[in-house]
Image (cartoon, rainbow, N blue to C red):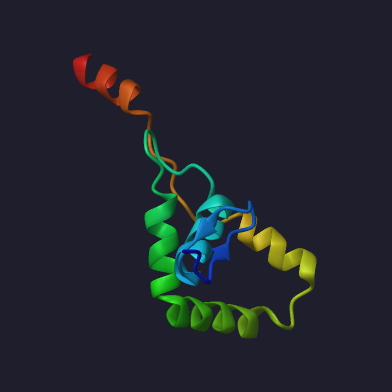
Length: 98
């Protein structure tokens, strides 16, 4: 016998039984492939949804710190984070051998 039910769909049209899974699917798709082999994006998406309040608080703080800056300056700062680039593992192994 047919039954009535509720379903949720992500932006690609995939069916999910609950809204959290549909949201996690959309977040993972937005993040794209992270890491080699199986992507870490689904796990990261799950954590983002789980820690949503904390993430939103961080963005609210960011918005308040940058509210007086021109939009172009904010974009420039985001693109130039203070991140150290690590040496390629193969070149590091060659340096050890020498």
